Image 1: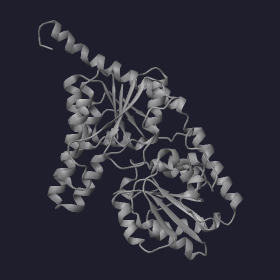
Image 2: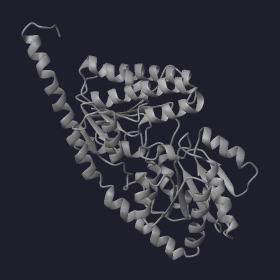
Image 3: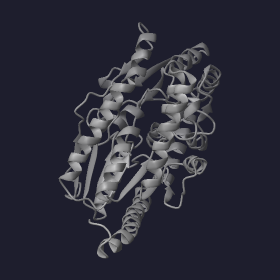
Image 4: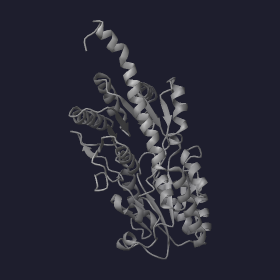
Amino acid sequence: MNLHDYSGHPFQAQLSRDLAARGHHVLHGYCAQYVTGRGLLERTSDDPRTLAFAPTSAGEPLVKYSPVGRTRFELSYARAWQRALEGEHFDVVVACNVPLFALARMRRYFARRRQPWVLWHQDVYSLGVAAEARRRLPGPVAGVIASAVQRAEQAQVRAADSVVAIGDGFLEQYRRWGVPTGHVRVIPNWAPVDHLVPGERENAWSVRNGLPVEPVRLLYAGTLGRKHNPLLLLELLDAVRARGVDAVLTVVSEGVGADDLAVAARGRADVRLMGYQPAADLPDVLASADAVIALLEPDAAQFSVPSKVHSYLSAGRPIVALVPAGNPAARDVAGAGGCVATPDVAGAHEAASWIAEVTRDPAGLQVLGKRARALAEEQFDIARIGAEFDAVLHDAVRIAEHAREPVLALASAGGIRL
């Protein structure tokens, strides 16, 4: 099988390892040009020999926020992925986090090749594209684009032999689209609890990077893109300090949001921005914090679940989530005793009051951290999750074979040529 996770995130790599251990031959693909926090994307001595990792590169540069440049990149990326698939037979392909236009081309490729495939649906990209079009373009033009991209994404959900959606909100969207859901299974995202284990606040990474010992350490680790407002991090830090708490903020990220934040925080000694850290260092990065922060803008409420929340839970750290109340991550943060507030100035001040209260009691912080870890251990059982995906893969192959039976029968009768 080919599990292609465009982003190269940690829990998708963990799933590939689990599926390989179950007897699948797994080629795990990812985009070499996409800059983000990576999982462990190379085979180790502990991995089955049936597991391999393969980066994919487009022939065009990744221009993330240029409509023309981004489209050229995505189509080129699809061609590169196709070349990789043509060198080997795969019983099933899993497409995860693949951008909308790249996957539109791959959908047609899968149909031509009669390739069984699974859509692991992490975000309803067409809604984000439509929102961006409305921000940039006149109403009638934006409306045409919104309709076109939603039709493309609907077609992907319909065409996949099986769909894994990460939340119930996806099912509701499919029904609004009029797309049948009999081939859809909901499997929420998770984090690799065997790798992201709670650690000591003072550790090799914190010492190597000179993190101050005395202040309260706030940490944001992950993507800062269009679905985030990075300036809320400064609003939160200032509000915490205004409440008499000596606090510092570390941001581990790269890209346009991190660049904007760097400009806004220039000259501040209480803010440190760092690039993405190696996957092996992530447990120490998260352990170095007294509280960790997640952000998400309102228009991403139902569909975009910040994967960093799952990492924070696994690391056993108190969480502040400035996210819409309807987002599934809000439920997990609240269940772990963390703070959920709206992603705006008022929410940042509410969260600051919470931080000022809980950081007065180091023992209380430890209790919150243990609650977070316990929730992660309960929900992120890779043996159970791997078994669910294993069933999805077999369903996809069975559904694809069943769909081909009428075609084969017609061919045997001389109706068409295969």
